[in-house]
Image (cartoon, rainbow, N blue to C red; front, top):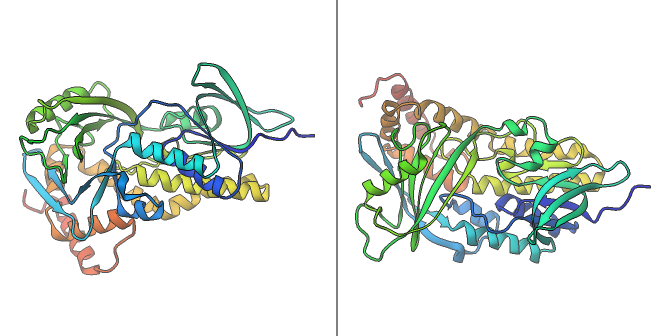
Length: 395
């Protein structure tokens, strides 16, 4: 006779994806354990759209800043402002935002434990056995019918259980949180996100300065080995007049470039968030997609628990890609083409100066839906893009 499991589901990783999955599963009445190692803050610009606030019931007090515009800076130094009409980009600090989500999971009924995942063991006569080290450094165990691996881009859960998970391509991101003085020098605007498309700051991605109220995130990403991320941030801080500001902390971590082809092992494990590779190419947006992925993972595991069919685990990826796969594909093409040289980056920033592009970009970002109300705008953008791609537009 099979041994009973302590939990229906163990969620490994308490970031936005894991915490969302744990909350949803607990609210559905399942026995859930949320395992998260304390003290780590992911490097992140912290931008979230209004759609996330609505869909996941995020209280407004968690926003440390509202950005009402973005500025794109080309290799030549040309700056294009993209004001947001009728909306905003919300900014959150990941330490307080993630902790809110973990605490909400606990209040919803999930059992929260601090510890670091070590390995998963399949027992012949019982549920899966999770080995982890708790906050005191002691070896611990727990059993569950299903495991959700939401433990980041270099997921231990994924590497041990799902073929190909160890080969996920990544950009390495690094940022410095600085204290913003009351009297701001240079060109920094506490209500604007600045994005730098300049090869010397990142040969294949971009650099950023994002407002966070009393602090700001200055960051960069690149997949090029040997490229100095710290050196790029030093140059960016100097050029923007923020080199004199106090550095509060620094953080670095790998960020996945595209979704894995498979998220489950066909038995008892399902990946979510960065572990599944759901960070949008080109933009690097991850929080919204991580939380959507966590919700899809929770729904799929709940169906597997209810029906006894492990095939339900595949539904998480199928549903997510049906909703967002086309966006990821388009953004992947954009990153591959526009970020390859400073000449192309210059043209990309030029495109961002177009009112149609700005309108459709912000509407799509804020609402996470295709904008169908202006078919003429789509047509104009198509022909303008073709002109840029073919080199017919003026530089």
